[in-house]
Amino acid sequence: MKYGPDISIVAQLLGDPARANMVMALMSGQALSAAELAHEAGVTPPTATGHLNKLVSLGLLRGEKQGRHRFFQLCDPDVGEAVEALIAVATRAGHLRTRLGPKDEAMRHARSCYDHLGGRLAVDLTGRWLAAGMLAWRGGVLQLTRKGREFLSGRGIEFTKLDAQKRALCRSCIDWSERRPHLGGSLGAAILAYAMAEGWAVRGQGQRLVSFSRRGEENFVRWYSPAAT
Image (cartoon, rainbow, N blue to C red; front, side, top):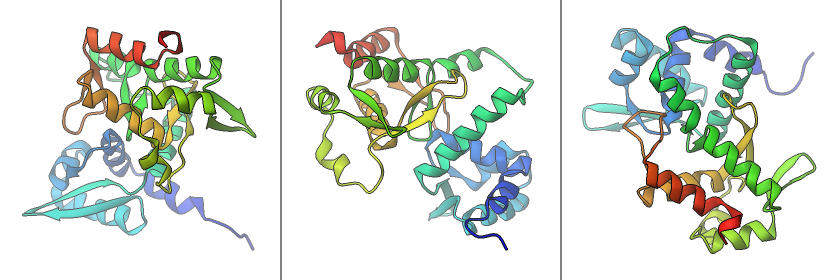
């Protein structure tokens, strides 16, 4: 007899192309309606409802009714982290979508990984902070050092709220396009929220693409660069 969590149930659920497309659409971190997810999956609304009910019942999504519509999001950040890890594995194995376009290069530069930043900018940030001793690997776990906490406190990150969360402050997330780690966890989410609040970056409803203006990207890189202190 085997013991422990049965990953085959979750794997089977995500193995359906329609459900996988729905979950991928929700990697933007924003809530989408059942009709929007039906369009993303290429199925009829009744079929989409069946898929969504399964995803909700097994704890991958949560739904909330607003007026006549029901909106869905990933249930928890760890679902997004698991999906991003699957994307990295699929990329390494060569299981890529065939329709490429200008948006693909932009997505590799900066995108949302559920609620934190992914892409080249995110990998660059993580690499610089590791090199500067602001982040460190301890027992194979990515952690913020005292130097990093002091630096970010001076950059406007409020740790009182972050420390009160049950969610891990730092998580390493393998970036699917760069194949190197970027920063997740509540701190990663706070950094993306800060960049957007400052007006350096924007993203459209239901989109993973994070668009930085030229000046916004310059300000963001200056903000996270230790040399700027």
